[in-house]
Length: 362
Image (cartoon, rainbow, N blue to C red):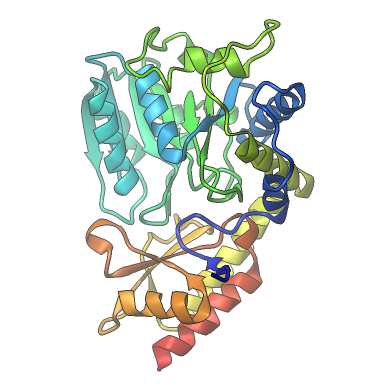
């Protein structure tokens, strides 16, 4: 069967950086091979640079971005803790579910989908929560929320937890500058790597308040850290690390840092704004609140009388272009178009604009 080469312009995964793909084809190393451990250590250092943090506990977890969410609540929620969650889309919704499964008393602060998080309402939802959690770049709606303002306004009692799955390496993220305590991402979006890893970072303040024996063995950061951190002269085996994926992440991070974070952000901004202008020129209406739209993930309202699923099917089967449906109750009324990582280029925006425009006119 011939290989199908898609242009992945949905909400993720995106087409990887070529350097990331090449690294997947390199000879496989063992998970305790000194050469692999060197790559792992360098990957963690590169993640610190991209997260803009000095956090010692910055590492790639084995699993997709959702593993990062799970690890965050599993390791830092104590039964009965009050956890305030800003809900302005699908992944805020998911946070409430995961936090509750680990024994949290969840206080949810609901917003209209397509709107950014209202910082004041979130911080006033409870006087002394253990954790305040929010999504920086809501993948379901294409909206950016102000995590810096949320962290600045949060009470001292609260650890600030940020979902950065669709923001890391696409728009500015500054963990130390913002005062975020716990954050996670995924490799398949702006980092330009295949799905399968969740970059994770934890502040010292949060680490002191971790669960000593989390209710999950696989995601116990105490145990994982003993393997990833070789600073004490040894590494304790926990699970077999996905060595090829980590090598691929290492290569992609090198590519990003060689280009320069500011240049990478600018590339995403230029491509996203070009796409959004072009969609409006086609007479389409953007879904996310103006002023809070993500350049890397654009949401657009499907025109009346247009079969959303049929257009996406034609794009995929006849043009090898993938775009995403909306999420939740917007599944049939919104398209999600991603320009992430290697795809954050004006020519990718022009490709989807030209093809979608022809389909809509016909």
